[in-house]
Image (tube, rainbow, N blue to C red; front, side, top):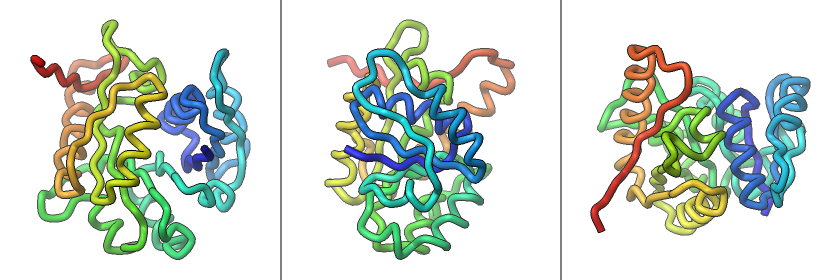
Length: 207
């Protein structure tokens, strides 16, 4: 499986590492090719079945699964520029806007720009440090995946499970604003507590 990741910051590096652990061939891109190369080198871990290679943004948009590990304004810009190229692909939006709105989540606005894309909202409920390690306080990190396209959702859930995370089906994109709000809450609480490590939400069902 090939996966394109746009964004070579801490979040992009963490997702690239997870995807490589899941056995994917990862194409990692950034506006700065130097930054992408440095992140690709840091994302490769011993024992990973997959690979991480730095590439151009255009090349990273070609796989059937593309991850936007970029902020909200950049996600908007990239979608406007490449809506045609992304049509039919599963695109995972990780952005957490500064404000969340039940009537219009960030990913719903992306849907408006590129309705032919199979949009997925995921990985907003844990920060880059937790995703990179895959555990928090000795517990596997939980992640939540929302999408209207069932095939895209299943592909992302299975990939995340193989990567060592524990993925939950969070329903359709109508729930995306909740995941965005959880991400914003986690960021704010982390800032207030001046966390030096990382944070994540844990779902603990009594089954």
